[in-house]
Image (cartoon, rainbow, N blue to C red; front, side, top):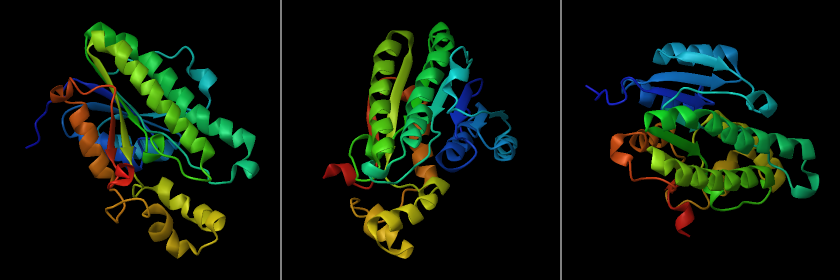
Length: 250
């Protein structure tokens, strides 16, 4: 039987209706946490929340002005929501660039800002920012995504420094390509921009930098998140934990 070490804890997972977010939701719920599934897709959020005995929060996190006065009463915050666009800088739509930064950098800042007061009051909190190998390395044609993830790395470290006196940790998880809908949706764009068939994208683009030649599974990322929210990880803060098959070892 799974140890119920998160019983009584409240966890908010953004982009929690699928992929890494859903895997994290199951990890936390299985250990007793009450999980809030934040997602743009109302039906998917409701289904995911029902599956983990939690609650849905249907929200457009790219509408950051609506988050300015938000308050959150949670013990665990996982900033996971994200999208991807693949295009050369010279052809990258400026509004799409702004969208990615709002969703993957501004909204994590606003959610952290909303969650810290309650965490400080309790003297315990865990912030996990789902970054990427692209938070530490760059790839061509991903200017917005790489910029947002690099910014998220800095935000996470500042959160760690400010949260430390209050029992709050903040860390990034940096996966390589994970088997999720986000990755599947970019295969066509990758094929177009690199001039190769879609059938060759995984091998020739997504796995080229990894020493371990396979995609990361969502539950592998969730298992690392599960350790980071445990009491055993109280000294783990301000760090970036790669789970990238050796990509950033190069």
